[in-house]
Length: 267
Image 1 (cartoon, rainbow, N blue to C red):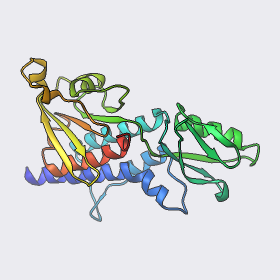
Image 2 (image 1 turned 120 degrees about the vertical axis):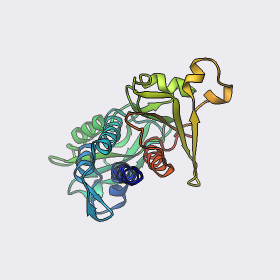
Image 3 (image 1 turned 180 degrees about the vertical axis):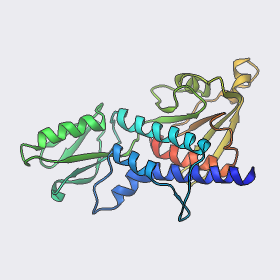
């Protein structure tokens, strides 16, 4: 059983790194265009290599990885840009018109040489890509534009595991643990109300893992510190059938690394 748990942990962390690092790693390679969301999906599902050797995922591992990939794709496709977010603009065969890193200003704009100041706030990456393609066609014939989200710097938290709608939540108001779980649809029938973890990563690389007993909160038996306010970048893990085998610190840190990419910034 110990060997099986280690295998699951290793496969999970590998899957997390594949999904979480794809857009960042691509952006770092100056000669290549950033990945679109569909390319990230294909890259993460096709790779099955761990420590240089091919490995077949077990049903448990595949279920966990599938949820992580689904959360990432859903976040990428529905996320609306805001101040502080960072995007990359790639125009195929026109490197001089490509921008490796554009930061959304406090008023929700980016500057693009051919078009001046452009309002991007509240647009999804897909909407902005369509707008760019149409607008830049005035200057470039049949342009092929790819826009990628490099950093999402609004205040967000992640909710994963045995909840009805796992994903990334934007904190439009202060949220407690119970608030976030409720916004994620609540704990499923297979989820554990007495075994909920909060993962918090600090700038120096430290990861804090706090166990919360939601059952006691619901029964009014928990202290104020047990249902404290969340911080931007926190990740809530509800243990149960899906996450029942992720009891090791290494596996939890792997999830935290993935979630930090999704929820980075906005502190």
